Amino acid sequence: MNGLKRQWRPSAVGLAAVLILSSAAVAQNLPLTERIQQCGGCHGEDGNSQIEKVPSLAGQPEFFTINQLVLMREGVRRIEAMMPFVNDLKDEDILALAKHFASLPPKRSEEAVDPALVNRGAEIAEARRCASCHLPSLAGQEQMPRLAKQRIDYMIYALKSYLTDSRTGADTAMTAAILGASDADIAALAHYAASR
Amino acid sequence: MTHRFSAGRTTLLAGAVGSLILASSAVFAQQPPGLSPLDKSNPKASKQDGNLKPHATPSLATPAEKIPIDKLKLPAGFKAEIWSHGHPGGRTMVMGPKGTVFMGSRIIGRVYAITDKNGKREVKIIAQGLTQPNGLAIGKDGALYVLAINRVLRYDNIEDKLDNPGDPVELTKEFNLPPEIHHNWKYADFGPDGKLYIQVGANCNICEINPGVHGQIRRYNADGSGMEIVARGVRNTVGFDWHPVTKELWFTDNGRDWAGDAGPEDELNRVAKGQEGANYGFPYCHANGIPDPDVKRPSPCAGVVMPAALTGPHSAGMGIKFYTGEMFPKAYQNVAFIARRGSWNKADKYGYDVVLARTSDGKAKIEPFLTGLLDQKKNEFYGRPTYLLQMKDGSMLVSDEQNGAIYRISYSGKK
Image (tube, each protein chain N blue to C red):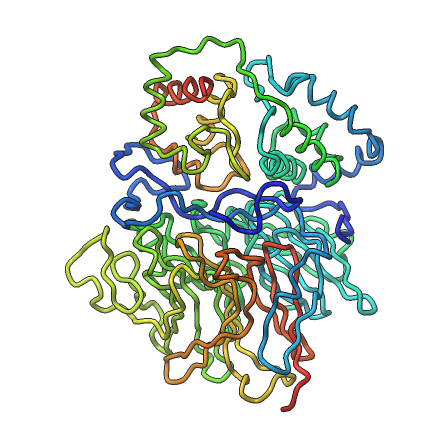
Protein backbone atom coordinates (compact mmCIF):
# COMPACT_ATOMS: atom_id res chain seq x y z
CA MET A 1 0.00 0.00 0.00
CA ASN A 2 1.07 3.55 -0.59
CA GLY A 3 3.95 2.63 -2.82
CA LEU A 4 5.62 0.55 -0.14
CA LYS A 5 7.39 -2.36 -1.68
CA ARG A 6 7.24 -4.84 1.13
CA GLN A 7 9.98 -7.37 1.03
CA TRP A 8 9.80 -9.95 3.75
CA ARG A 9 13.27 -11.25 4.30
CA PRO A 10 15.13 -12.96 7.10
CA SER A 11 15.56 -10.28 9.68
CA ALA A 12 16.09 -9.72 13.36
CA VAL A 13 13.00 -11.83 13.84
CA GLY A 14 13.91 -14.49 11.38
CA LEU A 15 11.13 -16.84 12.37
CA ALA A 16 8.32 -14.33 12.10
CA ALA A 17 9.59 -13.22 8.74
CA VAL A 18 9.75 -16.78 7.44
CA LEU A 19 6.22 -17.48 8.65
CA ILE A 20 5.02 -14.40 6.87
CA LEU A 21 6.84 -15.37 3.73
CA SER A 22 5.51 -18.92 3.63
CA SER A 23 1.86 -18.37 4.46
CA ALA A 24 1.59 -15.20 2.43
CA ALA A 25 1.93 -17.42 -0.58
CA VAL A 26 -1.03 -19.65 0.29
CA ALA A 27 -3.68 -17.37 1.74
CA GLN A 28 -3.13 -13.95 0.28
CA ASN A 29 -6.56 -13.53 -1.24
CA LEU A 30 -8.91 -14.76 1.44
CA PRO A 31 -12.14 -12.77 1.05
CA LEU A 32 -13.20 -10.50 3.89
CA THR A 33 -16.25 -12.58 4.81
CA GLU A 34 -14.04 -15.60 5.35
CA ARG A 35 -11.60 -13.62 7.43
CA ILE A 36 -14.43 -12.33 9.60
CA GLN A 37 -15.63 -15.91 10.05
CA GLN A 38 -12.13 -16.92 11.14
CA CYS A 39 -12.08 -14.17 13.76
CA GLY A 40 -15.56 -15.10 14.93
CA GLY A 41 -14.43 -18.63 15.70
CA CYS A 42 -12.84 -17.35 18.89
CA HIS A 43 -13.91 -13.71 19.28
CA GLY A 44 -17.62 -14.47 18.73
CA GLU A 45 -19.63 -14.30 15.53
CA ASP A 46 -21.03 -10.95 16.60
CA GLY A 47 -17.61 -9.86 17.92
CA ASN A 48 -18.60 -10.62 21.52
CA SER A 49 -16.42 -13.40 22.82
CA GLN A 50 -17.84 -16.35 24.74
CA ILE A 51 -14.45 -17.93 25.25
CA GLU A 52 -12.44 -17.50 28.42
CA LYS A 53 -9.66 -14.91 28.18
CA VAL A 54 -10.44 -14.14 24.54
CA PRO A 55 -11.34 -10.46 24.18
CA SER A 56 -14.48 -9.09 22.60
CA LEU A 57 -13.82 -6.95 19.55
CA ALA A 58 -17.31 -5.55 19.02
CA GLY A 59 -17.37 -1.77 19.22
CA GLN A 60 -13.60 -1.40 19.46
CA PRO A 61 -12.34 1.90 18.02
CA GLU A 62 -11.23 1.32 14.45
CA PHE A 63 -7.81 2.77 15.15
CA PHE A 64 -7.24 0.45 18.06
CA THR A 65 -7.97 -2.69 16.05
CA ILE A 66 -5.90 -1.58 13.06
CA ASN A 67 -3.03 -0.70 15.31
CA GLN A 68 -3.06 -4.01 17.17
CA LEU A 69 -3.35 -6.06 13.98
CA VAL A 70 -0.39 -4.21 12.48
CA LEU A 71 1.68 -4.75 15.62
CA MET A 72 0.78 -8.45 15.73
CA ARG A 73 1.59 -8.86 12.05
CA GLU A 74 4.95 -7.14 12.58
CA GLY A 75 5.77 -9.47 15.44
CA VAL A 76 5.92 -6.53 17.83
CA ARG A 77 2.92 -7.68 19.88
CA ARG A 78 3.54 -11.41 19.84
CA ILE A 79 0.58 -13.69 20.40
CA GLU A 80 1.28 -17.18 19.13
CA ALA A 81 -2.40 -18.07 18.78
CA MET A 82 -2.92 -15.06 16.51
CA MET A 83 0.10 -15.55 14.26
CA PRO A 84 -1.52 -17.87 11.71
CA PHE A 85 -4.33 -15.34 11.22
CA VAL A 86 -2.38 -12.10 11.08
CA ASN A 87 0.87 -12.95 9.34
CA ASP A 88 -0.54 -12.67 5.83
CA LEU A 89 -2.91 -9.77 6.46
CA LYS A 90 -2.61 -6.96 3.97
CA ASP A 91 -3.13 -3.35 5.02
CA GLU A 92 -6.46 -3.37 3.16
CA ASP A 93 -7.64 -6.45 5.11
CA ILE A 94 -6.70 -4.78 8.37
CA LEU A 95 -8.62 -1.63 7.52
CA ALA A 96 -11.71 -3.63 6.56
CA LEU A 97 -11.64 -5.87 9.64
CA ALA A 98 -11.23 -2.91 11.95
CA LYS A 99 -14.16 -1.14 10.33
CA HIS A 100 -16.29 -4.27 10.61
CA PHE A 101 -15.65 -4.84 14.32
CA ALA A 102 -16.08 -1.15 15.14
CA SER A 103 -19.58 -1.34 13.68
CA LEU A 104 -20.78 -4.25 15.85
CA PRO A 105 -22.71 -3.53 19.07
CA PRO A 106 -20.83 -4.62 22.20
CA LYS A 107 -22.63 -7.01 24.54
CA ARG A 108 -21.71 -8.06 28.04
CA SER A 109 -20.56 -11.69 28.46
CA GLU A 110 -22.38 -14.28 30.56
CA GLU A 111 -19.90 -13.78 33.43
CA ALA A 112 -21.47 -12.66 36.70
CA VAL A 113 -20.81 -9.01 37.57
CA ASP A 114 -20.40 -8.33 41.30
CA PRO A 115 -21.98 -4.95 42.25
CA ALA A 116 -19.66 -4.48 45.25
CA LEU A 117 -16.65 -4.93 42.99
CA VAL A 118 -18.18 -2.57 40.43
CA ASN A 119 -18.40 0.18 43.07
CA ARG A 120 -14.87 -0.38 44.23
CA GLY A 121 -13.65 -0.52 40.62
CA ALA A 122 -15.31 2.82 39.90
CA GLU A 123 -13.32 4.40 42.74
CA ILE A 124 -10.06 2.89 41.57
CA ALA A 125 -10.75 3.96 37.99
CA GLU A 126 -11.33 7.49 39.23
CA ALA A 127 -8.08 7.53 41.22
CA ARG A 128 -6.11 6.09 38.32
CA ARG A 129 -7.75 8.40 35.82
CA CYS A 130 -8.76 5.65 33.39
CA ALA A 131 -11.34 7.96 31.82
CA SER A 132 -8.73 10.48 30.67
CA CYS A 133 -7.80 8.07 27.88
CA HIS A 134 -10.59 5.48 27.73
CA LEU A 135 -13.36 8.12 28.17
CA PRO A 136 -15.85 8.26 31.08
CA SER A 137 -18.03 5.70 29.26
CA LEU A 138 -14.94 3.45 28.82
CA ALA A 139 -15.91 3.24 25.13
CA GLY A 140 -12.26 3.94 24.18
CA GLN A 141 -10.99 6.30 21.50
CA GLU A 142 -8.31 6.30 18.85
CA GLN A 143 -5.55 3.90 19.93
CA MET A 144 -7.13 3.32 23.35
CA PRO A 145 -9.42 0.28 23.48
CA ARG A 146 -13.02 0.01 24.58
CA LEU A 147 -13.14 -1.50 28.07
CA ALA A 148 -16.89 -1.25 28.57
CA LYS A 149 -18.59 -4.68 28.39
CA GLN A 150 -15.24 -6.42 27.94
CA ARG A 151 -14.94 -9.94 29.34
CA ILE A 152 -13.93 -9.90 33.01
CA ASP A 153 -11.41 -12.75 32.69
CA TYR A 154 -9.76 -11.07 29.73
CA MET A 155 -9.55 -7.69 31.49
CA ILE A 156 -7.86 -9.34 34.46
CA TYR A 157 -5.44 -11.13 32.15
CA ALA A 158 -4.65 -7.93 30.19
CA LEU A 159 -4.16 -5.75 33.27
CA LYS A 160 -1.86 -8.32 34.84
CA SER A 161 0.17 -8.42 31.64
CA TYR A 162 0.67 -4.67 31.90
CA LEU A 163 1.45 -4.91 35.60
CA THR A 164 4.25 -7.38 34.96
CA ASP A 165 5.36 -5.64 31.75
CA SER A 166 4.84 -8.88 29.87
CA ARG A 167 2.65 -7.41 27.14
CA THR A 168 5.11 -6.82 24.34
CA GLY A 169 4.67 -3.96 21.94
CA ALA A 170 2.94 -1.73 24.45
CA ASP A 171 4.45 1.56 25.43
CA THR A 172 4.85 2.67 29.01
CA ALA A 173 1.55 4.51 29.46
CA MET A 174 -0.44 1.48 30.69
CA THR A 175 2.45 0.08 32.71
CA ALA A 176 2.48 3.41 34.52
CA ALA A 177 -1.29 3.61 34.87
CA ILE A 178 -1.61 0.19 36.52
CA LEU A 179 1.55 0.40 38.60
CA GLY A 180 1.14 -1.00 42.12
CA ALA A 181 -2.39 -2.40 41.64
CA SER A 182 -3.26 -5.46 43.76
CA ASP A 183 -5.07 -8.55 42.45
CA ALA A 184 -8.18 -7.27 44.23
CA ASP A 185 -7.85 -3.86 42.54
CA ILE A 186 -7.54 -5.49 39.15
CA ALA A 187 -10.58 -7.71 39.72
CA ALA A 188 -12.57 -4.64 40.78
CA LEU A 189 -11.49 -2.71 37.68
CA ALA A 190 -12.49 -5.66 35.47
CA HIS A 191 -15.96 -5.89 37.02
CA TYR A 192 -16.39 -2.13 36.73
CA ALA A 193 -15.44 -2.18 33.04
CA ALA A 194 -17.76 -5.12 32.30
CA SER A 195 -20.63 -3.24 33.96
CA ARG A 196 -20.27 -0.13 31.81
CA MET B 1 -8.53 17.73 21.96
CA THR B 2 -8.85 18.04 18.26
CA HIS B 3 -6.23 17.38 15.72
CA ARG B 4 -6.39 16.25 12.17
CA PHE B 5 -5.65 12.66 13.03
CA SER B 6 -9.00 11.72 14.40
CA ALA B 7 -11.09 8.57 14.13
CA GLY B 8 -12.52 7.71 10.75
CA ARG B 9 -9.42 8.29 8.70
CA THR B 10 -7.22 5.63 7.31
CA THR B 11 -4.28 6.86 9.29
CA LEU B 12 -3.94 5.30 12.61
CA LEU B 13 -2.53 5.61 15.96
CA ALA B 14 0.09 3.69 17.76
CA GLY B 15 0.72 3.34 21.45
CA ALA B 16 0.62 6.35 23.66
CA VAL B 17 4.06 7.59 24.29
CA GLY B 18 6.02 9.10 27.00
CA SER B 19 4.89 10.56 30.19
CA LEU B 20 3.06 9.08 33.04
CA ILE B 21 -0.44 9.86 33.99
CA LEU B 22 -0.53 8.84 37.60
CA ALA B 23 -2.97 9.66 40.29
CA SER B 24 -1.06 12.09 42.42
CA SER B 25 -2.33 10.68 45.70
CA ALA B 26 -1.58 7.07 44.95
CA VAL B 27 1.20 5.38 46.86
CA PHE B 28 2.85 2.66 44.85
CA ALA B 29 4.77 -0.08 46.55
CA GLN B 30 5.83 -2.22 43.63
CA GLN B 31 8.32 -1.62 40.90
CA PRO B 32 7.65 -3.31 37.60
CA PRO B 33 10.44 -3.30 35.07
CA GLY B 34 10.45 -0.26 32.85
CA LEU B 35 9.26 2.30 35.31
CA SER B 36 10.53 4.09 38.34
CA PRO B 37 8.22 3.87 41.36
CA LEU B 38 9.56 7.24 42.42
CA ASP B 39 7.87 9.24 39.70
CA LYS B 40 6.80 12.57 41.11
CA SER B 41 4.53 13.69 38.26
CA ASN B 42 1.82 15.85 39.75
CA PRO B 43 -0.73 16.79 37.09
CA LYS B 44 -3.03 18.41 39.65
CA ALA B 45 -0.42 20.83 40.94
CA SER B 46 0.57 21.74 37.38
CA LYS B 47 -2.88 23.27 36.83
CA GLN B 48 -2.82 21.75 33.36
CA ASP B 49 -5.66 19.97 31.62
CA GLY B 50 -5.42 16.50 33.15
CA ASN B 51 -6.73 14.93 29.94
CA LEU B 52 -3.70 15.92 27.88
CA LYS B 53 -2.02 12.85 26.44
CA PRO B 54 0.57 12.01 23.82
CA HIS B 55 -0.63 12.09 20.21
CA ALA B 56 -0.48 8.63 18.75
CA THR B 57 1.62 7.76 15.72
CA PRO B 58 -0.20 6.11 12.79
CA SER B 59 0.86 2.52 12.17
CA LEU B 60 -0.02 2.73 8.47
CA ALA B 61 1.43 5.43 6.23
CA THR B 62 -0.57 8.36 4.90
CA PRO B 63 -1.49 7.85 1.22
CA ALA B 64 0.77 9.93 -1.02
CA GLU B 65 -2.00 12.26 -2.12
CA LYS B 66 -2.80 13.14 1.51
CA ILE B 67 0.74 14.00 2.57
CA PRO B 68 0.65 17.69 3.60
CA ILE B 69 3.45 18.82 1.28
CA ASP B 70 1.45 21.92 0.25
CA LYS B 71 1.33 23.10 3.84
CA LEU B 72 5.09 23.43 4.18
CA LYS B 73 6.45 26.99 4.28
CA LEU B 74 10.14 27.83 3.84
CA PRO B 75 12.27 30.97 3.45
CA ALA B 76 12.49 32.42 -0.08
CA GLY B 77 14.48 30.32 -2.54
CA PHE B 78 13.88 27.04 -0.68
CA LYS B 79 11.61 24.30 -1.94
CA ALA B 80 10.13 21.18 -0.34
CA GLU B 81 9.12 18.02 -2.17
CA ILE B 82 8.15 14.50 -1.11
CA TRP B 83 11.35 12.47 -1.35
CA SER B 84 9.86 9.17 -0.20
CA HIS B 85 6.77 7.82 1.54
CA GLY B 86 5.15 4.60 2.64
CA HIS B 87 7.36 3.96 5.67
CA PRO B 88 4.99 4.32 8.63
CA GLY B 89 6.62 5.38 11.88
CA GLY B 90 9.97 6.15 10.18
CA ARG B 91 12.03 8.60 12.25
CA THR B 92 15.84 8.55 12.44
CA MET B 93 17.80 8.66 9.17
CA VAL B 94 21.41 7.73 8.39
CA MET B 95 23.11 7.23 5.03
CA GLY B 96 25.43 4.39 4.09
CA PRO B 97 28.55 5.08 2.01
CA LYS B 98 26.74 3.78 -1.10
CA GLY B 99 23.83 6.16 -0.65
CA THR B 100 21.20 3.96 1.03
CA VAL B 101 19.09 5.88 3.53
CA PHE B 102 18.27 3.77 6.59
CA MET B 103 15.36 4.70 8.82
CA GLY B 104 14.68 3.67 12.40
CA SER B 105 11.28 3.67 14.12
CA ARG B 106 9.69 3.25 17.52
CA ILE B 107 6.47 1.32 18.17
CA ILE B 108 6.20 -0.34 14.77
CA GLY B 109 9.59 -1.94 15.37
CA ARG B 110 10.94 -1.73 11.81
CA VAL B 111 14.17 -0.62 10.18
CA TYR B 112 13.72 0.60 6.62
CA ALA B 113 16.22 0.88 3.79
CA ILE B 114 15.44 3.42 1.08
CA THR B 115 17.35 3.33 -2.18
CA ASP B 116 17.28 5.73 -5.08
CA LYS B 117 16.77 4.07 -8.46
CA ASN B 118 16.72 6.51 -11.38
CA GLY B 119 15.12 9.20 -9.31
CA LYS B 120 12.56 6.85 -7.75
CA ARG B 121 12.74 5.66 -4.19
CA GLU B 122 12.36 2.04 -3.23
CA VAL B 123 11.47 1.20 0.38
CA LYS B 124 12.50 -2.11 1.92
CA ILE B 125 12.08 -3.46 5.43
CA ILE B 126 15.41 -4.89 6.55
CA ALA B 127 14.42 -5.69 10.14
CA GLN B 128 11.13 -5.92 12.03
CA GLY B 129 9.70 -6.96 15.36
CA LEU B 130 12.37 -5.03 17.28
CA THR B 131 11.61 -3.03 20.43
CA GLN B 132 11.75 0.61 19.31
CA PRO B 133 14.80 0.50 17.01
CA ASN B 134 15.25 4.28 16.94
CA GLY B 135 19.04 4.31 17.19
CA LEU B 136 20.90 3.95 13.89
CA ALA B 137 24.55 4.65 13.15
CA ILE B 138 26.89 3.89 10.28
CA GLY B 139 30.21 2.48 11.46
CA LYS B 140 33.52 1.93 9.75
CA ASP B 141 33.24 0.06 6.44
CA GLY B 142 29.58 0.98 6.18
CA ALA B 143 28.27 -1.38 8.87
CA LEU B 144 24.82 -0.42 10.12
CA TYR B 145 24.37 -0.35 13.89
CA VAL B 146 20.76 -0.79 15.02
CA LEU B 147 20.03 0.10 18.64
CA ALA B 148 16.69 -1.10 19.96
CA ILE B 149 15.82 -0.62 23.62
CA ASN B 150 16.94 -4.09 24.52
CA ARG B 151 19.43 -4.92 21.79
CA VAL B 152 22.46 -3.68 19.86
CA LEU B 153 22.88 -5.22 16.40
CA ARG B 154 25.46 -4.70 13.68
CA TYR B 155 24.72 -5.43 10.03
CA ASP B 156 28.01 -5.73 8.15
CA ASN B 157 28.15 -4.89 4.43
CA ILE B 158 24.46 -4.20 4.63
CA GLU B 159 24.26 -2.14 1.46
CA ASP B 160 25.42 -5.12 -0.60
CA LYS B 161 22.60 -7.34 0.67
CA LEU B 162 19.54 -5.22 1.31
CA ASP B 163 17.31 -7.94 -0.10
CA ASN B 164 18.78 -10.54 2.22
CA PRO B 165 20.47 -8.90 5.22
CA GLY B 166 21.07 -12.20 7.04
CA ASP B 167 21.70 -12.40 10.76
CA PRO B 168 23.31 -9.36 12.32
CA VAL B 169 26.20 -9.49 14.76
CA GLU B 170 24.70 -9.34 18.25
CA LEU B 171 26.49 -6.79 20.45
CA THR B 172 23.83 -6.52 23.16
CA LYS B 173 26.00 -8.03 25.90
CA GLU B 174 29.01 -5.94 25.00
CA PHE B 175 27.11 -2.66 25.33
CA ASN B 176 25.16 -3.80 28.41
CA LEU B 177 22.57 -1.00 28.19
CA PRO B 178 19.80 -0.69 30.82
CA PRO B 179 16.56 -2.54 29.93
CA GLU B 180 14.02 0.07 31.06
CA ILE B 181 11.69 1.19 28.30
CA HIS B 182 10.75 4.66 29.48
CA HIS B 183 12.76 7.35 27.62
CA ASN B 184 15.14 4.65 26.57
CA TRP B 185 14.61 4.46 22.85
CA LYS B 186 18.04 5.26 21.57
CA TYR B 187 19.66 7.98 19.61
CA ALA B 188 23.19 7.04 18.55
CA ASP B 189 25.92 8.35 16.26
CA PHE B 190 29.64 7.99 15.76
CA GLY B 191 31.57 11.09 16.86
CA PRO B 192 34.65 12.63 15.22
CA ASP B 193 36.66 10.56 17.73
CA GLY B 194 35.32 7.33 16.22
CA LYS B 195 33.37 6.50 19.38
CA LEU B 196 29.72 5.50 19.37
CA TYR B 197 27.68 8.04 21.35
CA ILE B 198 24.45 6.71 22.87
CA GLN B 199 21.72 8.30 24.95
CA VAL B 200 20.29 6.67 28.09
CA GLY B 201 17.24 8.72 29.14
CA ALA B 202 15.64 9.24 32.54
CA ASN B 203 13.33 6.31 33.30
CA CYS B 204 10.47 8.56 34.36
CA ASN B 205 8.90 11.92 33.62
CA ILE B 206 10.33 13.40 36.80
CA CYS B 207 11.97 11.45 39.62
CA GLU B 208 15.24 10.87 41.44
CA ILE B 209 17.15 8.85 38.89
CA ASN B 210 20.17 6.68 39.52
CA PRO B 211 22.77 9.05 38.05
CA GLY B 212 25.15 6.14 37.52
CA VAL B 213 22.73 4.58 35.05
CA HIS B 214 20.14 7.01 33.68
CA GLY B 215 19.97 10.54 32.32
CA GLN B 216 23.22 10.29 30.40
CA ILE B 217 24.97 10.52 27.08
CA ARG B 218 27.64 7.81 26.91
CA ARG B 219 30.30 6.91 24.42
CA TYR B 220 31.73 3.50 23.63
CA ASN B 221 34.32 1.96 21.38
CA ALA B 222 32.65 0.46 18.34
CA ASP B 223 32.81 -3.01 19.92
CA GLY B 224 31.00 -1.90 23.08
CA SER B 225 34.08 -1.59 25.28
CA GLY B 226 35.49 1.48 27.03
CA MET B 227 32.27 3.14 28.15
CA GLU B 228 32.58 6.77 29.31
CA ILE B 229 29.90 9.18 30.47
CA VAL B 230 29.89 12.31 28.31
CA ALA B 231 26.99 14.17 29.92
CA ARG B 232 24.90 13.64 33.08
CA GLY B 233 21.57 14.99 34.28
CA VAL B 234 20.13 14.81 30.76
CA ARG B 235 16.42 14.00 30.89
CA ASN B 236 15.82 12.81 27.36
CA THR B 237 18.05 13.79 24.49
CA VAL B 238 16.87 12.34 21.21
CA GLY B 239 19.35 13.98 18.91
CA PHE B 240 22.93 15.26 18.82
CA ASP B 241 25.59 16.37 16.38
CA TRP B 242 29.09 17.78 16.43
CA HIS B 243 29.90 21.35 15.42
CA PRO B 244 31.82 21.12 12.13
CA VAL B 245 34.53 23.56 13.27
CA THR B 246 34.84 23.20 17.04
CA LYS B 247 33.97 19.44 16.99
CA GLU B 248 32.06 19.99 20.23
CA LEU B 249 28.95 17.91 20.92
CA TRP B 250 25.58 19.69 20.78
CA PHE B 251 22.41 17.95 21.91
CA THR B 252 18.69 18.58 22.20
CA ASP B 253 17.00 17.74 25.50
CA ASN B 254 13.26 17.47 26.13
CA GLY B 255 12.02 19.12 29.32
CA ARG B 256 9.71 17.49 31.84
CA ASP B 257 5.93 17.33 31.57
CA TRP B 258 3.22 18.20 34.08
CA ALA B 259 4.88 21.31 35.43
CA GLY B 260 2.79 23.79 33.45
CA ASP B 261 1.91 24.54 29.84
CA ALA B 262 4.71 27.12 29.72
CA GLY B 263 7.54 24.74 30.37
CA PRO B 264 10.14 24.27 31.64
CA GLU B 265 11.32 24.82 28.08
CA ASP B 266 13.28 22.27 26.09
CA GLU B 267 17.00 22.82 25.75
CA LEU B 268 19.80 22.94 23.24
CA ASN B 269 23.02 22.11 25.06
CA ARG B 270 26.71 22.01 24.31
CA VAL B 271 29.40 19.83 25.82
CA ALA B 272 32.36 22.21 25.82
CA LYS B 273 35.85 20.85 25.16
CA GLY B 274 37.23 19.37 28.37
CA GLN B 275 33.79 19.40 30.05
CA GLU B 276 32.89 15.79 29.29
CA GLY B 277 30.88 14.31 32.15
CA ALA B 278 29.34 17.67 33.13
CA ASN B 279 25.92 17.86 34.78
CA TYR B 280 22.93 19.30 32.88
CA GLY B 281 20.56 19.52 35.84
CA PHE B 282 17.92 16.77 35.70
CA PRO B 283 15.92 16.23 37.85
CA TYR B 284 16.58 19.25 40.10
CA CYS B 285 17.21 22.10 37.70
CA HIS B 286 15.58 22.78 34.32
CA ALA B 287 15.95 25.20 31.42
CA ASN B 288 17.72 28.46 32.39
CA GLY B 289 17.90 27.55 36.07
CA ILE B 290 14.32 26.68 37.06
CA PRO B 291 14.22 24.52 40.23
CA ASP B 292 11.94 21.50 39.90
CA PRO B 293 8.63 21.93 41.76
CA ASP B 294 8.33 18.24 42.67
CA VAL B 295 11.89 16.99 43.21
CA LYS B 296 13.69 19.42 45.48
CA ARG B 297 17.12 19.81 46.97
CA PRO B 298 19.13 22.78 48.27
CA SER B 299 20.92 24.80 45.56
CA PRO B 300 19.36 22.75 42.76
CA CYS B 301 21.24 24.55 40.00
CA ALA B 302 24.70 24.62 41.59
CA GLY B 303 27.27 23.30 39.15
CA VAL B 304 24.70 22.78 36.40
CA VAL B 305 25.67 23.69 32.82
CA MET B 306 23.06 26.14 31.50
CA PRO B 307 21.66 25.53 28.01
CA ALA B 308 23.07 27.25 24.92
CA ALA B 309 19.47 28.10 24.02
CA LEU B 310 15.92 27.35 25.11
CA THR B 311 13.90 25.71 22.36
CA GLY B 312 10.34 26.25 23.51
CA PRO B 313 7.84 24.67 25.92
CA HIS B 314 7.09 20.96 25.24
CA SER B 315 8.30 21.50 21.66
CA ALA B 316 10.08 18.11 21.57
CA GLY B 317 13.30 19.07 19.81
CA MET B 318 14.61 15.87 18.23
CA GLY B 319 17.13 15.60 15.41
CA ILE B 320 19.85 18.23 15.07
CA LYS B 321 22.19 18.59 12.08
CA PHE B 322 24.85 21.23 11.44
CA TYR B 323 24.69 22.19 7.78
CA THR B 324 27.95 21.77 5.85
CA GLY B 325 26.67 21.47 2.28
CA GLU B 326 27.17 23.79 -0.66
CA MET B 327 23.61 24.06 -1.94
CA PHE B 328 22.22 26.45 0.70
CA PRO B 329 23.44 30.08 0.92
CA LYS B 330 26.56 30.90 2.97
CA ALA B 331 24.41 32.21 5.83
CA TYR B 332 23.41 28.59 6.54
CA GLN B 333 26.95 27.24 6.75
CA ASN B 334 27.61 25.52 10.10
CA VAL B 335 24.12 26.48 11.26
CA ALA B 336 22.24 23.76 13.17
CA PHE B 337 18.83 22.61 11.93
CA ILE B 338 16.58 21.21 14.67
CA ALA B 339 13.40 19.19 14.02
CA ARG B 340 10.73 19.83 16.63
CA ARG B 341 8.17 17.03 16.77
CA GLY B 342 5.66 19.23 18.57
CA SER B 343 3.96 19.35 21.95
CA TRP B 344 1.40 17.14 23.66
CA ASN B 345 1.56 18.29 27.27
CA LYS B 346 0.33 21.78 26.41
CA ALA B 347 -3.20 22.99 25.66
CA ASP B 348 -2.08 25.31 22.83
CA LYS B 349 0.02 23.19 20.53
CA TYR B 350 3.58 24.31 19.84
CA GLY B 351 6.43 23.22 17.56
CA TYR B 352 5.77 20.82 14.65
CA ASP B 353 8.49 22.58 12.66
CA VAL B 354 12.18 22.84 11.87
CA VAL B 355 14.13 25.71 13.43
CA LEU B 356 17.66 26.99 12.98
CA ALA B 357 20.17 27.45 15.77
CA ARG B 358 22.91 29.93 14.94
CA THR B 359 25.66 29.18 17.39
CA SER B 360 28.49 31.33 18.61
CA ASP B 361 30.55 31.28 21.77
CA GLY B 362 28.62 28.41 23.29
CA LYS B 363 25.27 30.15 22.91
CA ALA B 364 22.67 29.84 20.17
CA LYS B 365 19.92 31.93 18.61
CA ILE B 366 16.80 30.10 17.46
CA GLU B 367 15.01 31.12 14.22
CA PRO B 368 12.11 29.58 12.31
CA PHE B 369 12.87 27.63 9.11
CA LEU B 370 10.23 25.10 8.08
CA THR B 371 6.69 25.92 9.28
CA GLY B 372 3.11 25.26 8.21
CA LEU B 373 2.44 21.88 9.84
CA LEU B 374 0.74 23.54 12.82
CA ASP B 375 -2.45 25.57 12.44
CA GLN B 376 -2.35 27.64 15.62
CA LYS B 377 -5.81 29.05 15.10
CA LYS B 378 -7.42 25.63 14.84
CA ASN B 379 -4.90 24.13 17.28
CA GLU B 380 -4.36 21.25 14.83
CA PHE B 381 -1.24 19.69 13.41
CA TYR B 382 -0.66 18.00 10.06
CA GLY B 383 2.73 16.37 10.50
CA ARG B 384 5.61 15.86 12.93
CA PRO B 385 9.19 16.54 11.79
CA THR B 386 11.53 14.23 13.65
CA TYR B 387 14.99 13.90 12.09
CA LEU B 388 17.27 15.49 9.48
CA LEU B 389 19.80 14.15 7.01
CA GLN B 390 22.09 16.17 4.77
CA MET B 391 22.40 14.69 1.28
CA LYS B 392 25.54 14.64 -0.84
CA ASP B 393 24.17 17.39 -3.10
CA GLY B 394 23.65 19.64 -0.08
CA SER B 395 19.88 19.24 0.09
CA MET B 396 18.35 18.34 3.46
CA LEU B 397 15.93 15.50 4.22
CA VAL B 398 13.31 15.93 6.94
CA SER B 399 11.41 12.88 8.20
CA ASP B 400 7.73 13.26 9.11
CA GLU B 401 6.89 10.43 11.50
CA GLN B 402 3.16 11.15 11.54
CA ASN B 403 2.78 10.71 7.77
CA GLY B 404 5.46 8.10 7.11
CA ALA B 405 7.12 10.47 4.66
CA ILE B 406 10.45 12.19 4.00
CA TYR B 407 10.62 15.71 2.56
CA ARG B 408 13.60 16.97 0.60
CA ILE B 409 14.50 20.64 1.11
CA SER B 410 16.51 22.18 -1.71
CA TYR B 411 17.63 25.72 -2.56
CA SER B 412 17.57 27.27 -5.98
CA GLY B 413 17.45 30.96 -5.15
CA LYS B 414 20.21 33.57 -5.29
CA LYS B 415 23.36 32.90 -3.32
